Image (tube, rainbow, N blue to C red):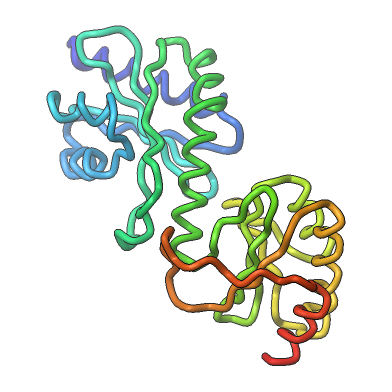
Length: 249
């Protein structure tokens, strides 16, 4: 009876928490009988700190998985022999090890049994670090080199489009105003379907970013890019470089 009560307590907490987090989340409870799911969760918890230590000492008996609309996942766990819960990020599956190289784990947090206060902590801390780690993993996977506050890197894509991962809203505003589309991951893409429109957009982006003190660099596709890859070529004259790049394609 005790285990059943704990199961309901965790599931109820996770349901309320999912409704309080920013964005759209759903919650799925995995009881003790879901042994394969629990084993998979143990392997995918994205943590090298407290949560990993606890899982090494206490086999996972139940968990609740929160899934965001874009596929990002969090796991809610009991805190053995103590009050409150543990919440950790779940690493995305199906990616090569190289995608995680140089990416710091978004270690989990300890929360109270108040789902409303816990949602504030998760949104203001764990989710911020989780989204940053996910963006870096996706950049590593797609060959898009992360930008810096003072420089935006544009990367040619296999389909002829351009992609960028700006870190400032100021840079993002310029890209969006010139036809780039922001994905939920934070990556901005400019379609290559219309090469004339694409060339016009990139000719405009360079000077507009430069006027804001943000440099621009152009990176040609060269397979998966790791954190220690050589830096992309800087573009000293954005308008001329964009026009030349568009003509050479």
